[in-house]
Length: 88
Image (tube, rainbow, N blue to C red):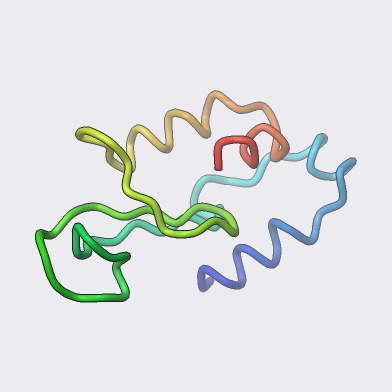
C-alpha cells in the first residue's frame, strides 16, 4: 500500500472509530527517508540526514539518533488511533 493510500485509510475513520481501533504499525502512514540536511528528501544537496513524514504533516528531521524502532515503540504505547494521531 502506498503512503497516500495508508493516509486516506487512516483519515477516513470518524472520531468514534479512531477511539475504538488501533491501526497496525505497518499500515500507518509513516515514511522515513534519507535526504539533504537543508531540504526535505525530495531535494538534493548538503549532508545526508534522516527525514520523517507522519500522517498528513510536512517532512521533519528528528533529533539525535532517532530511528524507526523508537517511532514503533511510541506507537506501541498508544491505545488507539486518536493517541497515535497526537504524536504527529
